[in-house]
Length: 123
Image (cartoon, rainbow, N blue to C red):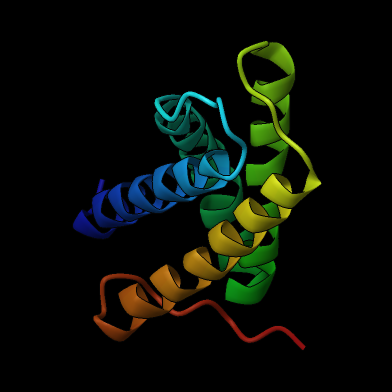
C-alpha cells in the first residue's frame, strides 16, 4: 500500500475513535473503551466502502455522506449487540456529523498535500 493509504487509515481511526468516545461521553454510564472498538470497526468499513468504492467514482462529498451513514450503522449495530452500551438518537447524530465532516476534511488535506489523487468532478 502507498503511504497515503496508511495516513488515511490512521487518520480515520483517530477521527472515528475520538468521535465515538465523545458521543459515548454524553450518556452517563457508557464505558469509553468501546469507543476504540467502534472506531476500529467503523474505520475498516468506511475505509473499504467510501474510500475505495465511492470516492474514486463520485467524489469527496458523496464519500463523506457514506462515511457518516456507515459509521452510524456500525455504531448502532454495536450498541444493539453490547448490552453495556446505551445509545440514543442524539449520540448517533453527533457521530454522524463528526465522522462525515471529518472524513471530508481529511480527504481535502490529503489532496492538498498530494498524498491522494483528486476525485473526478461529478455533476
